Image 1: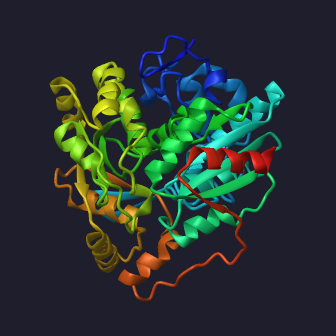
Image 2: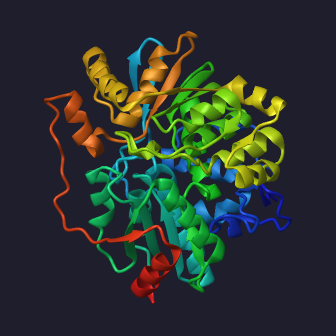
Length: 442
C-alpha cells in the first residue's frame, strides 16, 4: 500500500483517498508517495488503448488505490476531441509535444481535468462540499475553473495577480460567471497570490473542507507524468525534454518519470527574466528576487513551490533547506545534491525582446507560431547540440497571447473573448480575501 508523507518530515502519512483533497502538509511540506505500485513505468504498454484509458493504467500503476476513482470515470470531460497529445516535427532532432488542445488551451487541462473529476467523486463519497483555493500565474486558474465549474460539490476561489496576466487569460477565468466561482485579482505578484493561497490552505479560516488544485496537489503530478510516459513510448531511444518553467510542476513530473524508468536523459528548463530556476540550476542556490512582469506571464514566478519535491528527492530531506530559506530568504543545496541536479538539468533565460525575436525567428524558419512560453522551450531544444532527439513542450495556444505575438508576426489575427466579466480586486491582505470568500459562499 502506498502512503504519502511530507517533504519536511511530518509523521502522519496519508492514503490516496486523503491525498486527493490535500493541500500542504501540517509542517508546510508537500506530499510525496513512499513507493509506487509499479517501480518501472517503461513496463507500461499503450497497445490499443485510448489515451484516456492509458492514463488510467498509469494512475493505477502509480497507486493501486486510485483504481476505484479512475475506473468508470470520465477523466477529460472538457475535451471536445481525444486528449492524446500532438507531436509535430520541427527539424531532424527537434519535435514539439502540443499540450494545448484542451478546453482552456493550456497544458494545465491535462492534470486538472482528471483531478477535478476525482476530487468531485471523493467529495460525493464523503457527502461534503469542498472549497478549492487556487493561485494562478495565468493558466492554472482557468483550467481549475473549467474542471469544477459544473460540480455540485465544489466552490472555487482563484487568486491572480492584477494586470499581470494576458487579457485573454484573465477573461478565460472572469467570464465564467457561476454561483460556485469567485475570481479575485490581487494587487501584487503571483508569488503574493501563492503565499496567500498557502496561508488559506494551512490555516483554513472557513470551517469547511478546503482543497488545493495547484501543483502542490500530488494528483497534478500523476496527470503530468502520464503524458511523459506516453511521450517516451513514441521513440525507440532516449530523449531530452525542454520545458518552459515557472512553478516547476511540469519539469518535476518529467524528473519523477525519469526517476522511475522513463528514458529521458536531460531536462532543459527555460525561464524568462524571472530567472530564479536558472540561477538555482547553475549554482544550487535558491534566492528569489523581485518578480517582474513579462511577455511570458506564466513564468513570472520567483518562488517555485514544486521545486520542494525535487529538493527532497535530491537530498532526502527538505526541512533543513526550507528552514534556512525561511530564515534567510536564501538556501543552498549540499554539494552531492547539486552535482546530481547539474547532471540532469540545464537552463537558459530569455528576456522579453529575445522572446519576441524568437517568436518571429521560429515562424520565419519553420512556419509555426508559438506562444511566448513555448518559444523559449523550442529555442532551447533547437539550440541543444548533443544530437539526441529533444522534445519541446508546447504549454499554451498562441491565441492566449495574441497581443504579444502580433508584435512579432504582424499578420497574426488576434482572438478575443467578448463576454462579461465578474471579479473583485483586492490588496494582498488575508483578512480581506477571507471576507470576500465568506461573503460569496456563506
